[in-house]
Amino acid sequence: MSEYVPGACNIGSREIMRRRAVGVAALVFAIISGYTLLAADDLARSARWGIFFPLLVSAIGFIQARNKFCLAYGLAGTFNFGKIGDMERVFDAESKRIDRQKAIMTLVQAALFAGLATALFVSLP
Image (spheres, rainbow, N blue to C red):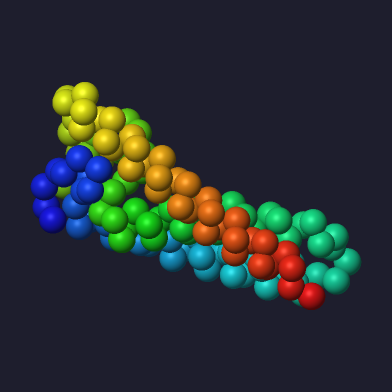
């Protein structure tokens, strides 16, 4: 898709690649952090909950790339199919409402995934 569709597509190929890169970078950071947390015997088990944020960022990045939909743009009522940073405004109120719903659903999905992955990580011996 290379055109704006409310609640379905609000970013083009450059923006999609950018979200995928954020997802990969945050996942690598989460893996390195997780390994470090597991290797440190003297840390409290509760320190493992700190991996939630990088997992959340990673999940948001991958979900946005897969859905071709930027959470922040959806909340702001904008879209972009050109160069990074060249945003256009959504003027239709119904389209904005649909975009905001999609953005919130993206955040909920990412939080659920990150929460489950974090809980599994915390439960590791």
